[in-house]
Amino acid sequence: MLLIGYDCAFAGQNQPAHPVHRTHLVHKTHVVHKARLVHKNRVAQRSHRVKVETVSLKTVTRSTGYATPQVAAAATAAVTPGGSVAKANPYTDMIAKYATQNGVPVELATAVVQIESNFNPKMRGSAGEIGLMQVKPATARMMGYTGSAKGLYDPETNIRIGMKYLAMAQQLGGGPTCNTILKYNAGHAATRMNPISERYCGKVLALLD
Image (cartoon, rainbow, N blue to C red; front, side):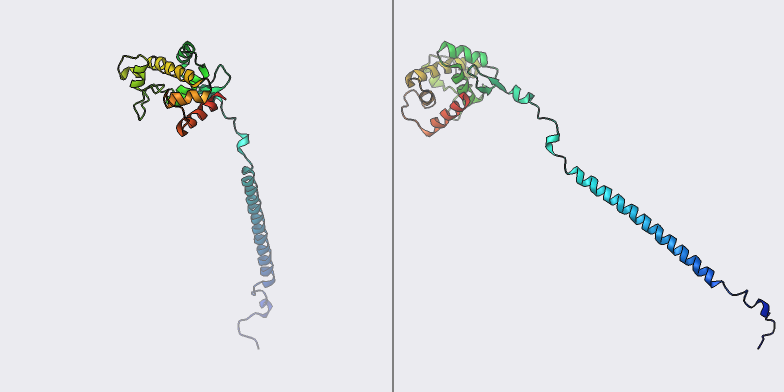
């Protein structure tokens, strides 16, 4: 049956070209899929490179850095005449002068001053000890000092009196270092080593070593 006004000759020309349209869609889908794969591969490669670089940073160690400067250590230490290392101080010449005058080894005298006050002339002990060698006013008077307690803060006055007392401790102790330290630390009349003087002597021996 024919419809009026419908031209059979052109019946097939108005229909959409489905095969061509599907081919176009397939091609387009393939291109998009391929582009996505390329993009994913590039992202994966970048991620891989980042991970490799991050891991490589972990291999850096402190041994690759600069060497520790030795200037600070050299500035705080000095070699004593006996070859041992003691803390540098501005009273080296003064200590050597009065130690030599009183027959006390310079190394021993320096160690005593370092332990007593760490070379601080303003040091004040809990029992009234004063200055570099922690001399008590009563002890200073025994050594012939006639000045005030305040005068014992003077570095040279303190070392002069303290070194005289140390020399007498050495003489009364008979020579051994720990005997000298006992009588300097606990008093000239002390005869038995006590824990405090024993620790004191240990520190002295460590500095003299």
